[in-house]
Image (cartoon, rainbow, N blue to C red):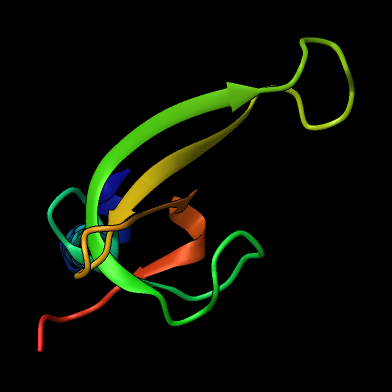
Length: 105
């Protein structure tokens, strides 16, 4: 079948697959670089447990799952609790999805 279509078409398809794979890998690396991890400086951007703008070092994290099997309402939702150590030494607790990574000034 490749002989009927032609080598140019097959080569173009292969090149398109390679470009798509490289683009997907680049997007994944950019997303991972933006995701905060232990030791990074973070700032609270949303949520109700801490005031917005609170900054500190992310020093602790724990992944949890909540929900019930066969509950029909978002079973086993996964989220991450974090600890933020502020400059004055006090500690705040929040969720990972409520903070953003910030650059050290």
